[in-house]
Length: 113
Image (tube, rainbow, N blue to C red; front, side):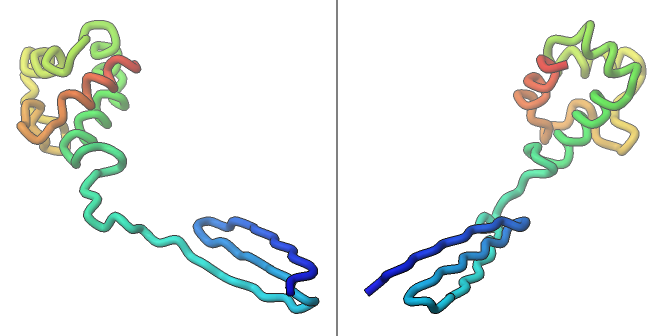
């Protein structure tokens, strides 16, 4: 028979501590959350490294940022701009027109500039 039930939950990072009192006896349960999707292939929240890298340069290079913000509605506009300036890749070596780049994600990022 359960007379007194006291549950305290506190979160620290991904750990949860539960303290329960039943018949004046305290029980403590510890649980830890682990990553369950070990097949996650994203890179810093982006589809892949190439998409992340292109986004990083567009958002963090002041000149490129201003051009993208004012002159580019789609990622293809960025590609045309960069090739027009004689640049075929990011300073990290990712080709602006790489097939690995997720144009939809970059287009969404451009809309938010």
